[in-house]
Length: 141
Image (cartoon, rainbow, N blue to C red; front, top):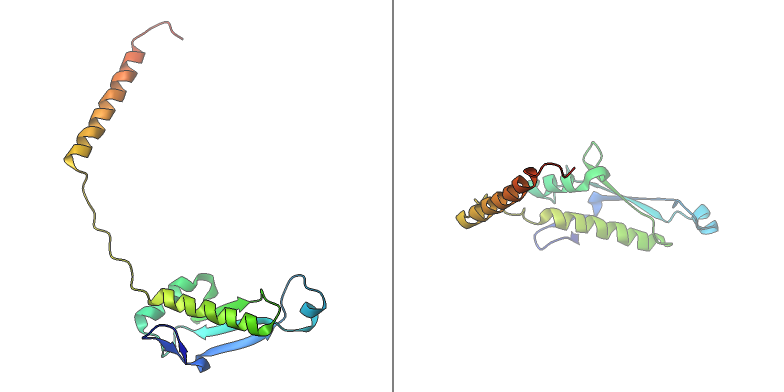
């Protein structure tokens, strides 16, 4: 079991890993060794996640989410398979932790104070006065 939060733990059998060759430069190591990790986690059908967390997780996943509700995380920054595997798992756990956080409270709409309204109107009146004084002088073109 992988402990995500104190209430959420994921069974390791829910995570599917496959190893592929990394892209980009790297010489013979890249061409011969499958160091990149492709981690797959079915967020829609996971029994470990509460429904609300699953829905938020699918929204947070964005382009990493397939049409079937599977999150795919690819890690290929390190040269070793084990470090890429640990990084992919940590990124998944962090994504689930973010989804497990409670949503922020709703914003309460507020009205401007009477003083702020008066200051705004005074400022507008001053600007209007300045502009009207400019308008009255002919022949300055």
